Image (cartoon, rainbow, N blue to C red; front, side, top):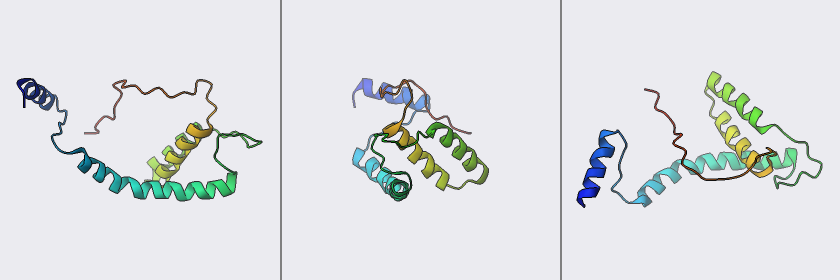
Length: 122
């Protein structure tokens, strides 16, 4: 470890920002072990959504336009009321549907670190 690395690590620790010295494969393995069951739930519901609403392919072809953002808000309200994680799966699927078929006038993808992060509750 260089002096710069040491100083950086100490500053990050003082700021309460976690540091990582390990192998990223361990992180990936831990995340995937939790992600896969969630994605399977999403996938199953997307299959039924395909049968109910038609293909999710970005082509309108007479399909009605859905307000995915409002549906996300409504399901978040439901989740806050009853804590049913199924609503979180629905929110993820609705976000995916908006990503594929969204019609926001400024729709685009531009990766950026805007310093907006999840804040701790305590």
